[in-house]
Image (cartoon, rainbow, N blue to C red; front, side, top):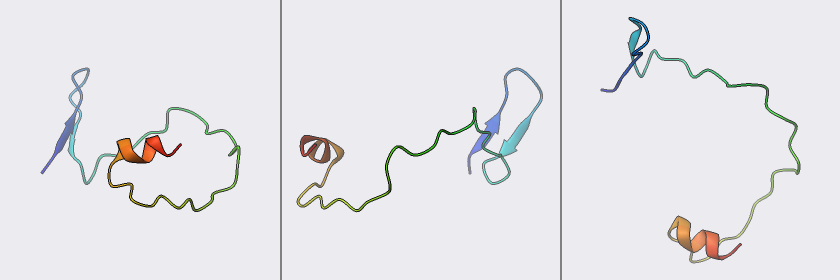
Length: 51
């Protein structure tokens, strides 16, 4: 079990009850989602090498 707490107040909650708060408005997407074939990329480092 994971706990979230604040050092600035008396707030505490387990991760199941803690909410994620957006830091601001998200901008519009710059391109449409697309599938990208990444053959043989088994790690993030290998994936980055392809781009």
